[in-house]
Amino acid sequence: MTSFVEPGKEELHIKYDQDYGYRYQATYVVAAACMFARWVIARLTNDAALLDRLDRTSDQLILPMTLLESVPPERRRNGL
Image (cartoon, rainbow, N blue to C red; front, side):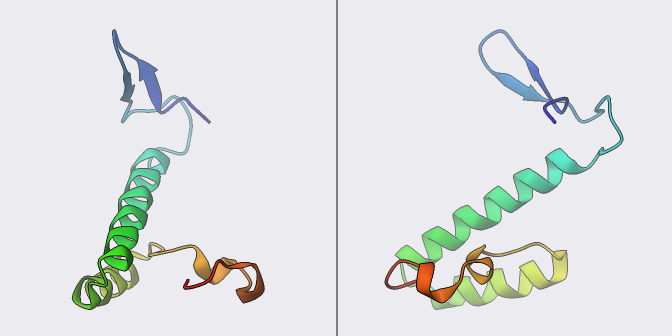
């Protein structure tokens, strides 16, 4: 699972040519992390325009904007 990273002198680097069959897994994980980070920022700043844009973009990219749909309402924190 970690064949998409390699150690550098001071930090890890992404290997775009992985040694296994899941070539695009690293790109997907990074894209999802960026989408989640932008969603958190949009929620914290109450930026409705950004939330709308993220929603449209996530549909276009077939990439989840948030994981809340996977969490039952009774298990979510207040306000989510």
